[in-house]
Image: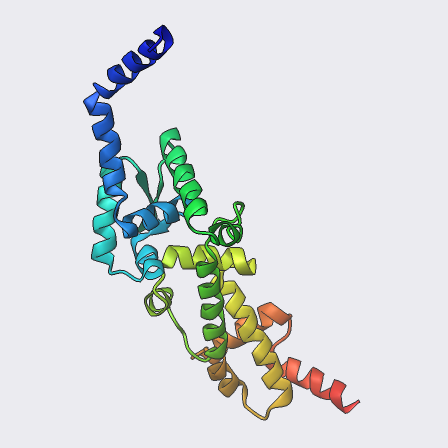
Length: 242
C-alpha cells in the first residue's frame, strides 16, 4: 500500500470515528424508512398543506398524519406557520433538506422507470397540486347546481375535505374572483335568464337564486345590471317582441 492509499485510509478511519455524525444521518434515514412519512416529506416539498388536506391526499386519518408531522418537525425536516385559523406545513428551507429531497428524487428516478415522466407533470411555478384544483372545480360545479341554496364555506370545507382557507385561496386563483363574488355573478345571470324566459314572479326568482328576501335580491340585481328586475323584464320582453 503506497503513501497516498495510507493517507486515504487514515482519513476514512477518522471520519468513521465520528459516531455522532453517522448517528444523525442514520436517524434521518430511519425516520424516512416509513413510506407514508417519506411521501409526506416529498409532498410538502412541492406544496404547503394543512393536516386536513394531507389526510385527504394521503387517504389517512388526521391523527395518523399529525403523528408523522410531529416526527418530521422534531427532526427539523419540516416547519409550520399559521394562516388565520389554519396551520400549514412545508419542508423547511435548510439546504440539507433540499439536498435530501434531491437524493430521494434521484433514487426514485433510478428505481421507478416512470417516475420522471410523472414528475414532469408537477408545475414548479404552481402553488397548488392538481388534486386541489380539481376539487375546487367540483366545488364550483356543486355551487352552480345549487344556486337556490345558501351554502356556508365551512359546510363546503367539510363536504369536500378541504380547509376553508385553502378553499377560498385556491378558488380565487382558479376563477379570478372570490367565491362569493363569482357565485353572485352566476346567481344574477340565472335571475336575468328566468326574468326573460319564465313566468315566475320576482319573489319566486329570488328564491330560485338563493335570496329569501325579495327586496335584498332586487337591490343586488339593480346594483349588478343598473336596472330593477321588473324593468329588466319589461325591457327584454319588448326587445323580444320587436
